[in-house]
Length: 484
Ligand code: DUC
Ligand code: ZN
Ligand code: ZN
Ligand code: ZN
Image (cartoon, rainbow, N blue to C red; front, top):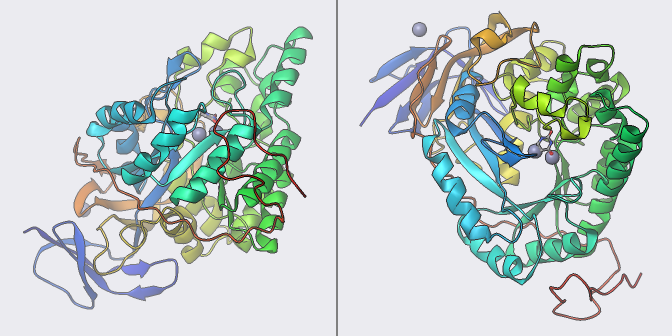
């Protein structure tokens, strides 16, 4: 049995701040209290002992836009640990007509290299009887979330009837739907017009995806989720219009969660204008960066609790990969990195500025998502019996972010030159010290798949719509129209 004791630190959870040591036995928290001894000691003097971060939104080695995202489960989870994140949730993406279970096999092969624990969301990339029939087995395999892309027309996008059918299926099987909320039809039309007018540079990407397309799709997904009677998790909420829709739904009593990204909280749309092509293209992601007013809205949402989780959508492409879009912004692979920088950037720009309390920091980086994903208190907690996924956080440790020292495998960093204060002294993944004073000592294959049992909280629908016929049809036509 290996025993480790974190000594002399201050524990910070989503609820409490108190001084205590933490004893870890075989990867699990065994005891919390004063003056513990009897094992390898890690000195946490001057540090906060917090649940390791959970990033619920990453794309590692993802096939996308004609290429694969460059960080895989090896470099991606190494980057995560380096920044204090101890669990990631990736997206399993079946190709058109591919069985969900076959896609899962591919993801299981890729994730064998993970340094920290992980899980997947299953994406609904097409719709049909097979998908409908396989969804319960996906839940049996420990995956209780299904992702729907309302954008990427002609590729990943699902139509509203498909989304409605899938949301209803999610309700039946105890799963929570996720949405990438952008109106894919309008985006495609704006892209075409911009290209026709000769606006083919990276700034065209931002013009083609205004806040309105996100606000519209967020509203639409919320209404459809309400009709289906399911909760809804909205990924990468980037603007006031989407935040407003989420706020309104929550205020009415719906379980709808919004997830701003650290990139949208700290970088703005000026990154796309009057910059060289590479600079802007490296920052092309969907949704794009917004102006300061939208950033203020996201920070306010975290403070007020109308937004629940800070993620990264880590989907890293090299400069060479980005350059496939020279002359046509619609071909620039969408995605930015952030896994390694999420926790230090949020601490620096949230806690150090007074916008977030330390407990709120823990809530939005770990505890809230652990509860939503039904893995609390195994993850996201400092409690006896919880996995020892812990970050020992030194609030006085500083650095300037630069690609030259990052773990990520790409050749730049969107936060290049940003100064952060607040970094891990130690990161522990199930009791194993993976970061020690800034030195990363990963272990490929240490990471394990975390099963997430079904947990669909009853969402009493506000909608007065009732299904006209039951069971509904699985085909793309024949879904009864709303009776309201
Ligand atoms: N947005 C991105 O920027 N990259 C991956 C997928 C997505 O929705
Ligand atoms: Zn997305
Ligand atoms: Zn994503
Ligand atoms: Zn040391």
